[in-house]
Amino acid sequence: MFTLDYQSRLPIYEQLYKSIIKMASLGVMEPNEKLPSVRALGQQLGVNPNTVQKAYQMLERDQIIYSIPGKGSFISPDLSSVDVKKSEALEKVALAVKEAIDHGVDKHELMQYIEQLLSIESAGEET
Amino acid sequence: MFTLDYQSRLPIYEQLYKSIIKMASLGVMEPNEKLPSVRALGQQLGVNPNTVQKAYQMLERDQIIYSIPGKGSFISPDLSSVDVKKSEALEKVALAVKEAIDHGVDKHELMQYIEQLLSIESAGEET
DNA sequence: CAACTGTATTAATTTAAATAGTACAGTTAT
DNA sequence: ATAACTGTACTATTTAAATTAATACAGTTG
Image (tube, rainbow over all chains, first blue to last red; front, side):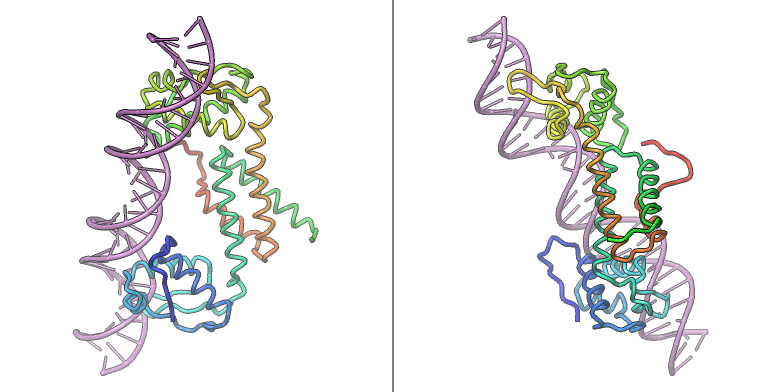
């Protein structure tokens, strides 16, 4: 069900994260379907359960899955947010923001800049 | 002339990089003015000359200074690139934000995402 | 050639990221 | 109630990357 590349420089939890996003977006896994437990998947893949948990927490942060302590983790009922492109877009934003900070842009200055960007967008224009 | 915070989590060469950019942009140092040699500044600051060199190389990459082997390092005659770097970084942020919106990311969701990235707090903080 | 200058390469150190070990708390069924 | 599940939190260990340093090289100047 899940395959990993242990030689990859990409962290295990990143591989899992992407893999599950793809499965969810392709419909291989359906809404509310139960995912393997962190322990079961960890054992199956030969990694620590916490490594699986890290992926699961990222997925929950992105509302791709939801987890209930004691019950399990499940594919989110609303997968509109489960879009690979969307995730990648957010990733790009994160990178660009980091780069801006590295180049000495003030945090609050940057926030105001982005707020302005977004309000201009909402003013209503399309590509 | 140069002051460092050795307790800071910010690397020495980053502090130097920013410090010299500020001096150049504020006009404290003028175009074509000679900078201290990597050895002289290294000794003055109590760090390895290569740490100074790293800052100098970043500054040269950004066309803020220019270095001539055997002669020295000098403030660039055209300092317009000082702000250009920052602008380019912001430009990247703008592009990434636009792309995210185009992919259906909610504006408020995006703002919160970025706020979290920047881990902005109510009160200002210093490193 | 002596005393400068920047540069390149490598090694040592320090710091952060990634993963693992262990213990805790909620759920479910018996 | 308890046994066997579940996710979670916290800490430690391991691994990788970033930072700094040591050393050697090559060009410039007087």
